[in-house]
Amino acid sequence: MNDTRHVTIVMVEDDEGHARLIERNIRRAGIMNDIKHFADGGTALAYLQDDQGGPAHNGPALVLLDLNLPDMSGTDILSAIKSDEKLRRTPVVVLTTTDDKTEIQRCYDLGCNVYITKPVNYESFADAIRQLGLFLSVIQVPEVEAP
Amino acid sequence: MAIQQNTLNRLVIGCVVTGFLALVLIGAAGVAVMARNLDFSKWVNHTYQVQNAIADYRTDNERLETARRGVLLSSDPAFIGIYRQMSEKLPRHVDELQRLTADNPVQQARVARLRILLRQQLTADDRSLADPSAARAALATRGVDDGLTAVRAIRALTDEMKADEARNLDERDAARAASLRSLYVVAIAAGVLLAVVAISSTWVILRYTRDLTVSRAALQALNAGLESEVAARTAELRRANDEIQRFAYIVSHDLRSPLVNVMGFTSELEAAAKPLGQLLQRAEAEAPDIVTPEARAAVTTDLPESLGFIRASTQKMDRLINAILRLSREGRRVLAPEPVDLKALFDNVAAGLKHRADELGARIEVAPDLPRLVSDRLALDQVFSNLVENALKYLKPGRPGFIQIRAHRRGDRVVVEVIDNGRGIDPKDHERIFDLFRRSGAQDQPGEGIGLAHVRALGYRLGATINVESALDQGATFRVSLPAVLSRETAAT
Image 1 (tube, rainbow over the protein chains, first blue to last red):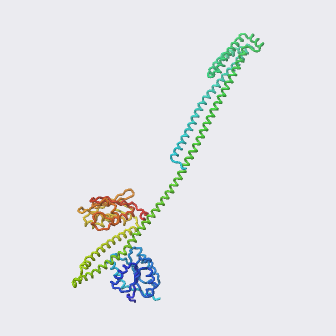
Image 2: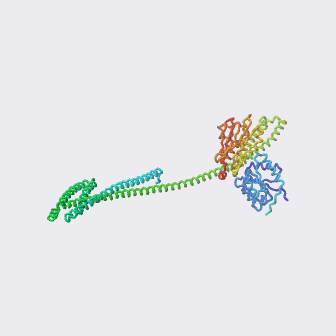
Image 3: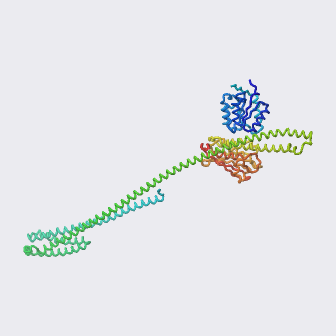
C-alpha cells in the first residue's frame, strides 16, 4: 500500500491563470502533494514517459489534463498515456472547459478516469477543485512497476 | 439556322394556301375542259348529223336516178312510184341540210346551189319522163342528158360537202385533243406544285421538329445544370453555415477560458480585500495617524466598487457566451421531423407557463381546432415557448394579459399566430428585435436579447418565416409560417 503523499500530480494546462487557480484550490483542500505544471503537451509527455524523476521511472502519479493545448490535442496525450505500457494505469482526470457530449464520450472511450468540466462561475469552480482535492486525498494510485 | 415560330407559321400557311390554290386551279381547269368537251361533242354530233343527212340525200338521189332510168328503160310503173316518192323526199332532205348547216355559211351556199341543181334535175327528169322516147334517144346519142348532168353535179357538190364536214370533224377532234392536252398540262403542273408544296411543308415541319428537339435537349441540359448549380450552392451554404456554427462554438469556448481567469482572480481579489479591510480597521483603532483618506477610500469604496463592476460585467459576458454556445449547439442539433399535434404542443407550452401567467394575472388561450404538421417537435416547442414567454414578459401594465395561439393551414404551409395585448413593439424595431443581443422598448425586464434571435435561427432551420405585426401599446402578433411537412433535406441543412 502506498502513501498518497508520494503521488505526484502532473498538471497539463496551457493557461497560467487556470493552473494557478487550480493549484491554489487544491492546496486549500489540504492536498500537499507535489504538483508539476506543464503548459504544453510535448514537454508534459516527455516528462511522463522519459524523465528520470517522472512517473514512468519513479513512483506513482496522477494526471490533470486540459484538452485545449497549443501544440497537440489533450485527447492525443490521453491516448498516448493509455497506450503506454508503464503509464496506462495512471489515473487521468480531464479538467477542461469543453462540455461537448461527444468529446466527453471520446475521453472515456480512450480510458480517462474522471471528466470534469471547469465551471465558469468561480465559486463552483473552486468548489469542484476542492472536491477533486478531497477525491485525490482518498483514491489509491497503483505503483508503476520499476523497469 | 433555327426556324423561328413566326417564320414557321408563315411557311406552313403559305404551303397550305398554295396547295389549295393548286387544287382550285385543277378543278377550274377540269370544269372548263369538260364544258369545252361537251361543246365539242355537240359539234361532232352535229357534223355526224350533217354527214348522215348528206349520205341520205346521196342515197335517195341515186335511187331517184335509178328509178328514172328504170322508167326510161322498162316503163315499169313501180319505178314511177319510187321516182315520185324520191322527188318528194329530196327537197325535204335539202331543207334538212339547210337547217343543219345554218351555222356554216360555206355549206349554206352549197345547199343553195344544191337546191338549184335539184330543181334543174327534177325539171329535166320530169321533162324526160314526159317524153321517154325522146329522152331515150337523147341518152343513146349523147350518152348523157340534163338529168344525168345535174346528178353528176350534185354528186360532186355533195362530195365537197362531205369532205368539208370530214375536215370539220378532224378540226374539232384536234381541238378536243388539244383541250384535253391542256387539261393534262394543267393537272400535271398542279400536281407538281402540290408535290413541291407537300415536300417543302414536310421539310419545314421536320426541320422545325428537329429544332424543337434540339432546343428541348438544350433546355433539359440547362435544367440539369441549374439543378447541379443549386446543389452546389446549397452545399456551399451548408458549408458556410457549418463554418459559422463551428466558429461560434470555438469562439465561445475560447472566450470562456480567459473568463474563468477573470472571474477566478476577481474572487481571489475579493477574498484578499477582506484581510485588507480588517487591517484598515485595526490601523484606525491602533494608529489612526497612519491611515490616509486615500487609503481608506481605496479599501472601503474604490476596491469593492471596482470588483463589483468587474463581477457584473464578467457575469454578463458569461451569459452572452453561454447564449452563443446554446445557439450554436441548437444549430448543430439534427432535426427529426415527426407528425406533431399542434393542439397538444401548444397546450403543453401553455401548461409550462401557467404558473408565470397566474402570477401576472394573464390568460393563455389555445384555439380548439389546429392543423397537424410534420416537423421537429423540440424545435417547435422552443420557438413557441419563447414567443409565449415574451408575450408574458412584455404585458402592458394595468391591462390583464390575454395571449391567444391559433393556427390555420394555407396551401402547403401552416401559419401559427401568437397574439398578445401587451405593450407592443415600435414598428421601427420590428427587424431589430430578431437580431442577437438586441432588444426594444423599456429595458425593465431581465434578458440578453437572445430569445427572438434563437426563435428566428430555429425557424430558418424548420423552413419557417417569422414576422411581427405590432404598434406601441397595441399588442403584438407574431406570425410563424411553417412548411406543413418538413422534408428531411431541409432538416439536414
